[in-house]
Amino acid sequence: MIALFLVFFLFGILAFVTADKPDGLRYKGLAQKTLGKEVIPFVHRLLGILLMLSAAVGSIWYFFFPPFSNKTFFWGYLLSTLLCFLISDGVALLRFKGK
Image 1 (cartoon, rainbow, N blue to C red):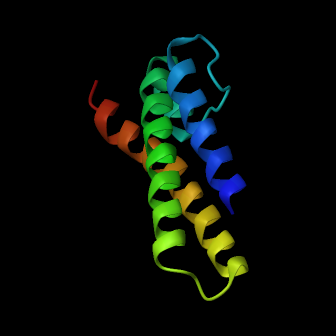
Image 2: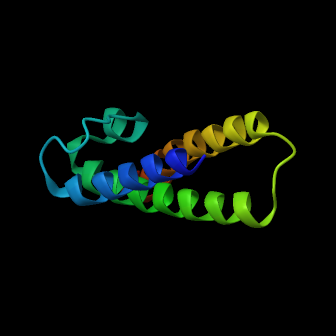
């Protein structure tokens, strides 16, 4: 489980650092498809922050409140990662919709 947290934390750092690059992570979600390329840096920064927070909270939760099973915790954590992607796209859609 420690490897899972480290991988997603490093992925969050990578998303945050490469946000200003033209291609970034090449993640093109709903916000980019509907609003254009100008939202990519915002989405990548927000995604990086959310992934780093998710990894930090997940690791603290895992060590201080042991789960019933690692399998359940693993799938729950992957679901929270998917929610990070959806939240970053949703916030970008709400923020840039009127512009």
